[in-house]
Length: 125
Image 1 (cartoon, rainbow, N blue to C red):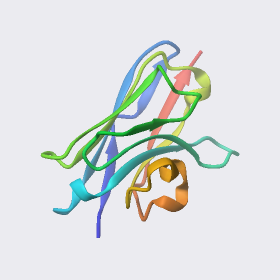
Image 2 (image 1 turned 60 degrees about the vertical axis):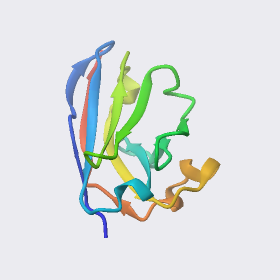
Image 3 (image 1 turned 135 degrees about the horizontal axis):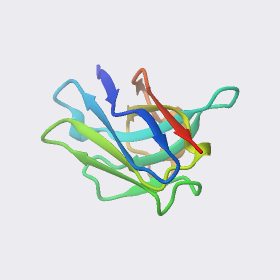
């Protein structure tokens, strides 16, 4: 069992940066792939970024490539999402997720077994 708690969300202006954190419980953190997803009001949850268990492989949605960076610190059981050059369309509830590493399928919701409650990101124009 893995419990995930996100933090770092908030209200920023367009062009600003935020760093989200996701702290995981349990001793098996380094065996899980980790992902970030987001859901805006009235829209389906969508993939943002994912990282393999030891960080060697990273995946990004086209909409965030070049602006967002996913990273992890297995010693701290934490995964991060650095978000730069934020746009109003990035506003959403961001959730982290943990699951078995599945390579290119890491963008799929079905690849993840454990989810956090989410943290709100609001971007004003």
